[in-house]
Image 1: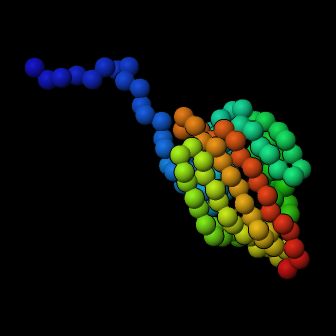
Image 2 (image 1 turned 180 degrees about the horizontal axis):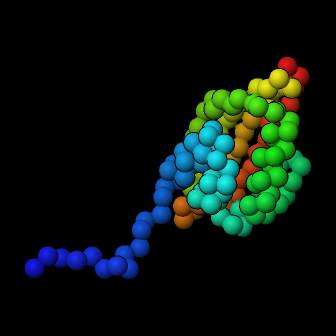
Image 3 (image 1 turned 60 degrees about the vertical axis):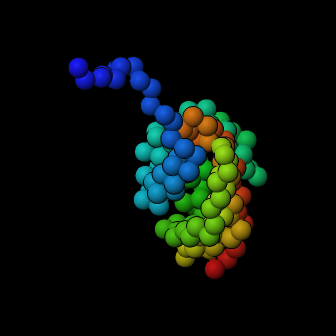
Length: 126
């Protein structure tokens, strides 16, 4: 007689690295809403020099701000680190309007979702 798995088997949450890499891939492809739905907790905390906010709208506002500052920007990921539930991204961006340098985002990822993100970068003229 074959062994059956229960229909109530809970799926193991994605790892920090899996969530982090999926987030980066979705952002490179400009899939903000898919990124929010799959990778962010509804009550994600966003900390930046300009904000201390909670929720998906905070992430939307931050993404819109960066798109306004660097329209049609291209971004380069310089370094990535993952340790336990923590992740770090070092990045830079370029646009006809200017450049973002010294970009650094940090993440706390638990139960397969981003629970906290910090963002810092410096804008300079092209």
